[in-house]
Length: 241
Image (cartoon, rainbow, N blue to C red; front, side, top):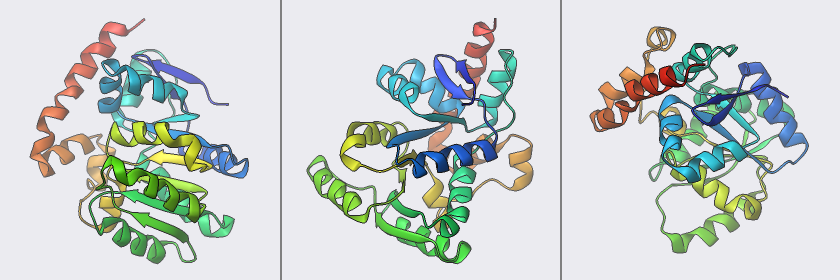
């Protein structure tokens, strides 16, 4: 098992992309019924003042370092963290390998029509992939039993949920036993990017660790949330051993 690294109370796994994919596939093979989280700086900062989210993250089978900030924090605190494992890239790699392994996948979340567009994109990118269901993320509490039944009936091996942080993590944790899915992952904007309704940062910005800035430029409403980043840096610096 990978080493767990404490970043402001969140136990993040020190893994490469290859190790993370292998671990998730093992969970699917074992029908483990686990949650996987993709922890970036914003999520970790939120967990410092949201006890429920902190508990959920630390109860996940795997928490991957999604974001340059998470990797930086581990290094700054004196730990090994081999690379960033972005949630989007992890989802793509699992989908790429799904046809060969005959994995069944369900997309849940985003605005009406987005999951269906993401399904079409996945079927183009990964011929033979089985997306066994889609459901948008606009629902009331009274709709939840129907959504759970829909997911149960589809029998996915992998459930990708795009409801945003922390709603996706809290929803999955609440219904994790009822859903009966081998692996569930909260994937944020992954379906939006796949559907083409949201752009991902150019490769050079990803390499320069500026993906957060690109998101802020595209979504000015995120500006307040991006203020979590300098706060994160200060908090990590204070926590340094």
